[in-house]
Amino acid sequence: MGPLIIISGPSGCGKSTLVERLLAQTNWPLHLAVSATTRPPRPGERDGTDYHFWTRERFDAELAADGFLEWAEVFGNRYGTLRREVEPYRARGEGVLLEIDVQGCRQVVRRCPDAVTIFVRTSTPEVLAERLRRRGTETAESLEQRLRGAAWELAHAHEYRHQVVNDDLESALKELRTILDPLFER
Ligand code: ADP
Ligand code: 5GP
Image 1 (cartoon, protein in one colour):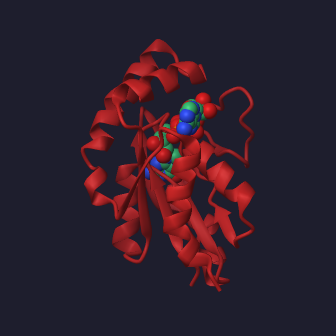
Image 2 (cartoon, helix red, strand yellow):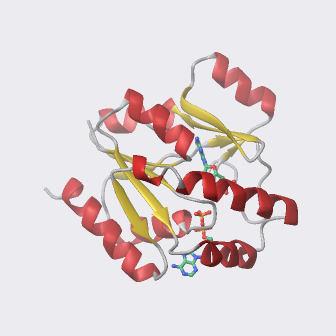
């Protein structure tokens, strides 16, 4: 079975940026699982690449068919990890990376206790707020919601095996490599 890696952390802490850089600088057999969500796409996001952007009906049909390894309601929308984005890859010995929230991580760890869990954060809430604002993807309301959510997620950071502070991107990448390199050494 290939390794299962879970990356969580407050919205805007830099998870996607870190993962994108990691995948670009390695040629590991590592699949980034594409989640399904009922949230609408942001400008530039592509269906099937960033997420499977589904209607609530499509999402609930998949749920009824037991297609999800985990799912959760986050900021008023449903997000879930599809079994088919995980199980076939791991069965072939490839690694799978999940970028999911704290609720989802708990569900996956219950089913796959060998998962390597990593919590990404910024050193202060101010850095996080500034980053989210600068990203320019959120309305005032959803920004507020994400910052409140960040406080909740941070309170659960201790549930993770590893923590990475992403203030300086290069240092954070290095820390991530220190955790993950041993999984892909042959
Ligand atoms: P997440 O996936 O956790 O929601 P993103 O990867 O979208 O976060 O990052 C949020 C914003 O912060 C983006 O605009 C990204 O370019 C920027 N960012 C990410 N990491 C850093 C960093 N170490 N220093 C400065 N800006 C960063
Ligand atoms: P965003 O809307 O910014 O892309 O993601 C919001 C939050 O949903 C982030 O905390 C992200 O980790 C989480 N998320 C994304 N995909 C999934 C998923 O498949 N399952 C769960 N539980 N959370 C997810």
